[in-house]
Length: 300
Image (cartoon, rainbow, N blue to C red):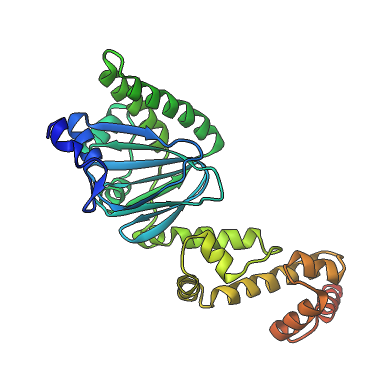
C-alpha cells in the first residue's frame, strides 16, 4: 500500500488500525510515546503484530478480548494486536505510556538472539490473549532509559536508523522479559483487575470504600464489581469490605492495647457506635467483650 492510498485511511476505521498496519508493512517495528498529560480514549481496534504497552505513569483501563486490565506505573502489557483492544485513560492523573508494536516472528528472533528464554506458555498467552506484569524499581530504571533511546532513534530517522532500532528493541525486549517465569492461568489473567481491586481494599480499609467509587476506579460497573466478588470470594463487594474490616478489628483487639475508638477508625468504621453495632452483628459479642475473652484465653 503506497502513501497516497493510505492517506484517507490513517487511524482507526472499521475496527482496523490502518495507519499502524501500514507502518508495520514499511518496517516491522513501530514505537511511539504518548505526550505527557495528553488525554485520550482509543476505541476497540486491531492491527498486525504483537503490541507491548509500557505505562510510565498514570492509570488507564486496557481491554483485550473484552476483558479489562488496570494499567498503572511500571506495568507492562503484551498481547496480540489482532485481539480486539481498547484503552481508556484516567483523566484525573497525568498519563504517559510507550507502545512498541513488532512482528511476532521478529519478537521471538530478538529474544533468542539475546538469549532470553521466555516460557512457552507466556509466549502462547501473548499470541492469543494477554500477558501482564510489573517491573521492580531496579528493572524500571533500565527500561525507562532504553525506551527513551529507542523512541528517539525511531523518530529521528538518522542514517542506518533501522539497524539501530532493531538492536535497541532487542535490548529493551530482553530487559522486559528476562526473569519472566511462567504466567498465570488464563483465568487468573482474566481476573487480574479483580486481584488488584482486592489488594486496593486491603490497603485502604481505613478509607471510604463505596461500591461506586471503587467500581469507577477500576473502570467497571458497580453491578459487575459485586458479581465478580460474589463469584470469586462468595460474598458481595460491600460484604467483602465489611468482612475484612471485622477481621482487621479482631486482629487489632487481640494484638494491641489501642482504645476501641482508635481501632474503629483504623478499621474504617465511621464511629465507635457503628463499629460496636457491626462487630456485635458479625461476632455475636461486643469489641470489648471479644478483647476480654482473648486475654482470658491467653492467661489460662
